[in-house]
Length: 244
Image 1 (cartoon, rainbow, N blue to C red):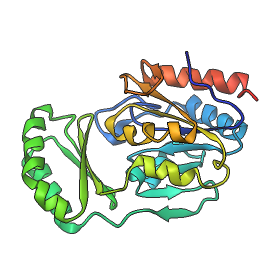
Image 2 (image 1 turned 180 degrees about the horizontal axis):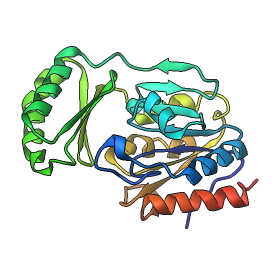
Image 3 (image 1 turned 180 degrees about the vertical axis):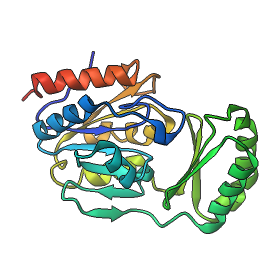
Image 4 (image 1 turned 120 degrees about the horizontal axis):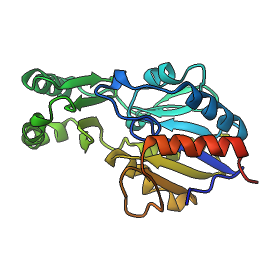
């Protein structure tokens, strides 16, 4: 079974691992040309109620999907752009002491990659899986310092993310749901990683549904095996049109 998407739905989509296959580095992902066309058709069918929800910055999301321009939640909820095109910053920048900690960790663990997105940090170790235990231990050591800076840490697929406490994808989706054309619609959200759980948790109260990719999450009713399966479903959905 696939999640129901109707005329009164709002479609929220994570990117890496959900829409796109994971790559060795964030810059190496490939966006199929037909996916842009599919998303553009769905954007029109839903009267603009389609949004990306990602740990990537809004600038990076735009670069991936141009010429398509949608509403977006970026940097795990720190940045948001509504369908009106207005940028809303939901978070203060990551404090410099935390940025320094992450830089030191990246420098001391060869093969890791630090993404500094101003309002969030992502330390990737996909190319250095042997660094995982050491990095996780370091996060425990630095936990008091991070707490003093009001920074939350979340572990994902071969990545450690840092963001201001209280900022997450769920808060970003909730904020978008208060704006046109999302307001009053039933959200449908797809994600694949632990950072997406913040959205899955709020869907029942919003009358929505979630789907996971490549793994199961408690309380999520629908599951796809891979990003390619998600893309195929979206293409079929665009071909047949959303139901009334």
